Image (cartoon, rainbow, N blue to C red; front, side, top):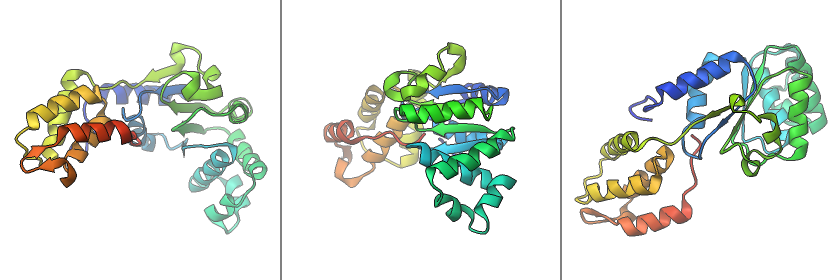
Length: 248
């Protein structure tokens, strides 16, 4: 992001908006750090019927998260089940109980689900999603690094065609250069070797906005500064060893 807005993603935002408006299941994929979560969070307020589930590690986590989201939307079935306990009461539900009340609520229709940060979902998890797709007739937006088995797991079979997918790519070299320059400017870095650092950032990040922001943030740390120079080599090594893409 730059200055409170999403940088150079107007076309991607519109493509995602169109997909959500169609209310059909699809896979939203792209490399970690590209900005998938950032775009979703920007658009989901326009689509309040979509229930956002972050990092669903299994059936229990998914159905509890969906139950809380439905409670926040005032779903009467979930409200009755929670009683006066609210979200805490839902968090205490067993996997079977949480699944039952969520499926009943979804059967009423009108909802959609976003499953973000998927990491090779299991066969059991995929079976539950299949039930949601069938019984509840609820569109499911899966968010993963790629459409391949190692990322999408057993959900890969649900999105076999190109029409079922939307890809978010890294920035082009030109856009990445402008994004990196603005990030460095905002960081306040005044090192004499900023041009060399910028060149290395673009080489290492390959246009990934999350990587660019992480590299610039590292360069602002005292451990990577020597007088008026950025210590590019050790920064690069640490980045390669330790960087985990943020939720974007």
